Length: 71
Image (cartoon, rainbow, N blue to C red):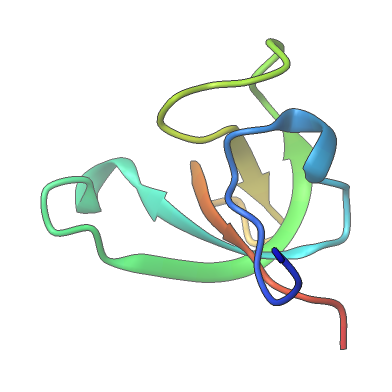
């Protein structure tokens, strides 16, 4: 059961205002995750194998690796 986290490959799973963990372009080699709140969805297709690209409220852009559960 996928109760605690969802991956970020399906656009339908990601909503504005959700807390997510993304990989920034500069951190793709290391895989370092950055946590933030979704401001905009940038990927138009319903799925993406590397994660849906989003912009966080702080302006950072990256691909969603994990969707964190609402608290």
